[in-house]
Image 1 (cartoon, rainbow, N blue to C red):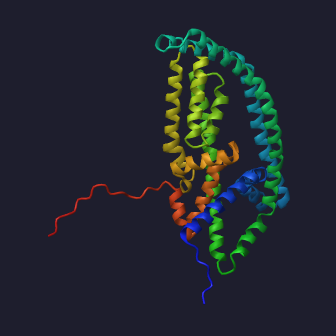
Image 2: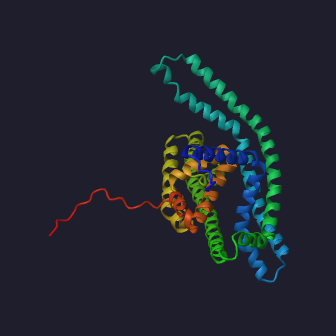
Image 3: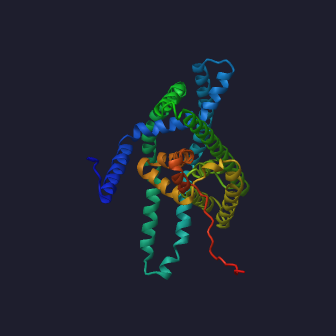
Length: 363
């Protein structure tokens, strides 16, 4: 007698939805633990070849990890100090920036009463209120920044600990994966783990190099155009470029707004737009295909959905984590036979579609 319980399709669908809901809820509730751990895992994957380099040169494993982390900390600290100095200059000019912006806004909407049934008094009232709110942003922003910095310090203290432990226990974790799948499939598992680590490392290094190149191109282009705070917003634009599609729109909007309020001619906003489009053309047609690992390219639909989902789940951190995580998932799916259809779905390889087909005459 077969006692296996067979559920109807609607019951299976309901269980699947409940499981997804519970899983997403757990990710949201545990975000303070999961997000630093994920950042630590990605950084550990990126730094693992450096640790191996020191180990091959007869360094103790713990010493090799400490040296690698110190070098990484020096680079990050130097970058952080540079960004803080640039942002302090920007904050000092914030009142002037607000004055120019409200003046430009005043000029832009002066024609509104002539075309719409709006009194000049109401327009001026809106302008004064907007200026007051913009000026108040600086004071409220300071409080928010202090809270964010406090949370960031906690995360920054956790991430190095996670990175150190993940690098130190790397052999244990790899051995656990081998034991999890048994001796009979150890060769296949070893191949998948090796290829996955290699592809993910190349992808992360490629993303880092792409960000550096885009930051340099953005800064040079803005400096040539004479835009204020060119280096700061050039780097911010490159970091926003890590968020596909959405980040680019925010970046070009920021560039054009800075150009409008810091330049006498509005043509500079158009020049900035042309510059941005040219850099994006170079990025999409040369930098990404040549430098970023092409094996983990994600299609546009999945990228937008996963970025929005990451932002809704974990905020800005989720938006930055979403693409590396989905890239890692795609790599794993591409190397496991039952999951290959999902890897294909995540990728951007379009199947050949025959729109017109002319049949030859039979002889």
